[in-house]
Amino acid sequence: MTDEQHVLRPTYTRAGVRAVAPRFTLPDAEMEPTSAYQVVHDEVMLDGNSRLNLATFVATWMGDEADRLYAEVYDKNMVDKDEYPRTAAVEENCWRILASLWNVPDVKACIGTSTIGSSEACMLGGLALKRRWQLARRAAGKPADRPNLIMSSAVQVCWEKFCNYFEVEARYVPITEEHPCLDGSDLEKYVDENTIGVVAIMGVTYTGMYEPVQEIAAALDALQERTGLDVPIHVDGASGAMIAPFLQPEIEWDFRLERVHSISTSGHKYGLVYPGVGWVVWRTLDALPEELIFRVSYLGGNMPTLALNFSRPGAQVLLQYFQFLRLGREGYTAIQQECQDVAKYLAHGIEALGAFELWNDGSDIPVFAWRLKPGHTENWDLYHLSDRLRMKGWLVPAYPMPDNLADLTVQRIVVRNGVSRDLADDLLEDIRVETEWLDGLTSPMPAEGRRSGFHH
Ligand SMILES: *Cc1c(COP(=O)(O)O)cnc(C)c1O
Image (tube, rainbow, N blue to C red; front, top):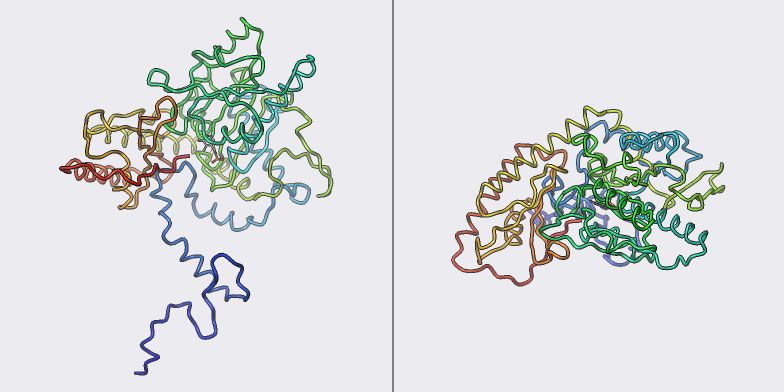
C-alpha cells in the first residue's frame, strides 16, 4: 500500500476540486456544485432538529403533496401579479376565506393582503390605525404629531418595532399576577385623544393566553360614552386567529365586535404553512386609508399593492390555499384539537411531577408555561432544566416574563402539528428524569453565563 492510500479523503475532496472557501469574502474561483452543496448541507447539520423545537410556533412539517407543490412553485414572485394572475387570485381567495372565518360583516366589502409574516401584517395594521387617526385629526384642525398605541407589556417584539420604526409612542399596560393579560381594566389611564388604537393579542407569545377582546372592546365602549374618544382595536391573532375559529367558536374576539378594525395572523404558525406567510384583513374599505395603497405600472397592468416588501415568495400563498382546500374546517379542527389535547396532557403531566406550577394549561392556544414552585429548591432553576433537556435534543426555552413580572422565570412549550402523543410521552419522561437529577444536587448549580432562550 502506498502512503497516498492511507490519506483520509472526505467524499467531496477530489483531485482538482476545491472545497475550501474564505468565510467572509467572496471566493475568487468557482466550486463544483456538488461540493458547494455538501458544504452548505454540512454547515446546517448541527442546527437543532426542527421537529424537537418546542420553542417555535412556526410550521416544520407539511407532508409530501405540499412539498411537491412547493418544489413546483418556488419560482413565483408574489409581486408579479400581472404576470401570475392566477397566483394573485389565489391570494385574494385566501384572505377572503380568512375574513369570513373571522366573521367579517360583508366579505365583498372588506380588504386584505398576504404578507411575509405576522410582523409585516402588524406593521400594516398599525400604519392603517396611525394614518386613519392622522386624517381625522387634521380634518378636525388638531395636531397629529404625537400618536400613541396601547398594548400589553407582553406584546410580541414586532409591536415594539412598529412603534420604534414608525414613531408612535408605545404605551405598555404592565401584566401582573392579578391581571396576567390586557383585560380592559385601567384602560382610561392610558387612552387619550392621541391614541391611534389598542392592540389585543389572541395568543400571548409568553404564555399562549387569549386576551379577552370582548372585555377590552366593552371598556372602550364605556370610555367612548364618557369621553367621546372612539378607539379602534387591532387583533394580533398571530397564532390564536387560526385556533379560536376551530376550537373556541363561541369566544367573540373577531369582526363580530364592531370595534375590531383589523386582524392579522401568521399563515406559517397554526395556518400550517412553511415559514414565509402572514395575513391581515380590515373589516371595511374605510378602515384602510386608500392613500396607503400604491398602484404601480412598471410590472404591466395597474396593480394595487399594500406591503413593506416588494418581491417576496408566492409559493407560501399557494401552500396556504392548498391547506385550506386539503383540510377544510374539519381538518383544521382535528389538527388544532389534537395539538390542544397533547398540550393539556403535557401540561398536567408536568404539573404532576410536583416541582412546578402551571401558569396556564394550553386550553387557549396549545401553548403553556410553567414556573418552579416557590421554595422548591435553591440549587437549580428553569434555565438549568432547559440546558439539561437540550442535551437530549429538546428545545424548551426558559425566559423572564415581561414587566411587571420580570423577576419571574417561566418555561414554555408550543405544541405544533407533528408534536405527537408519543413524542410528548418521551419528552415528559425526559423532563421527569432531568428534574430528578437536578433535585439530587447537594449544592447549587453555577449561575454564570446563563442566557434566556429565544421565545419570540
Ligand atoms: C409570532 C408572533 C408575531 C410575529 O409573527 P411572525 O409571523 O413571526 O412575523 C406577532 N405577534 C404574536 C402574538 C406572535 O406570536
